[in-house]
Image (cartoon, rainbow over all chains, first blue to last red):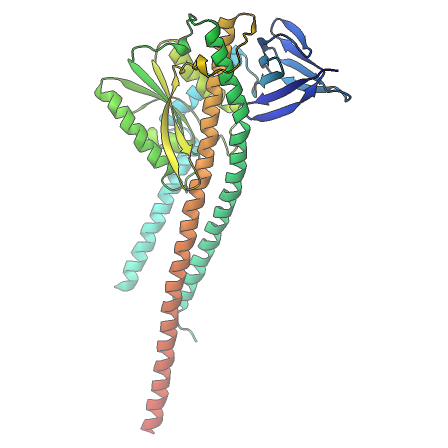
Length: 138
Length: 286
């Protein structure tokens, strides 16, 4: 039976590569099945399950939170998102990033202050040591 | 014999420091290898997505996608990738210098810049300056996650779509090799169109639902992949730079120990000589 090469990749690394008799993916317009010699297709995916049927092996399941499916004559590529994405989720993350900058600018964030304090401590120590040295020489 | 106790203490303290710097060097070396693997792992995704964009822009050259349009510049934005921790040589400082040069060049033309900072070092540096920081993310760790980057990226791409900024740059350190890291400022948006001539395959896709919507979706992912690559590369630079800095520190500590050892030996020899001459002098006096 004919097979098609399947690659599932995300921005953070390759997830799966191998031959398959059939691939199912949650397309944005509905579940789609890709058999060998499928016409070239480009669509994006909803969160759901990508199922790969390798020849003579058990079906493999992959969960994707979205992504892009690309079908070429001999190759299927699933560009999986590495992060769950939804409009409101993106919005929330954006707000959080903005908030962090504001906090830092107002001198609030504890971590940065800690770093500054450490720097000052090191400097003070160096001063102290230098002073000791000078005293010893006199 | 209580000669040169201070020197011996000093030698021991320098030896301890040397142990620490040597350990840090080795940790950085092993992390560098892992980060380089991660850089390579991100390549297939970036290449596939670039090819898809090429196909999409070929499919409809008259698409009006904000990310592809070049506008007149009234305000610019920078996504700045810096490290969270120090002790990595002049890595961050070099990037800051390049960036400040760039910003002041825009200022001369009356164009202001918005900054989005990734990494604690960058935030600590730029908050002391008169710059406009829009958003920030710190403590991304040695293994940056796309999920942590989505928020800061969304603030900048959102500002671009709303027309608040007309050009978005990515500032990060380019990993050339272990010895060389180059501060790089590259244009992120507008996205440079992929030359359709480069595409070797000549079929066209079936687009679901339609090419324009797909293009927008894919472009957003492309931008994220670009920033992610910048973040990973910056980590690789941090590790390489740290490795070199710590190696230099270890070598210097070694030299310092040699000097101290020499001083110690001299002091000891002087004390012995003095003692002998005292004994001889005493014997002669009897």
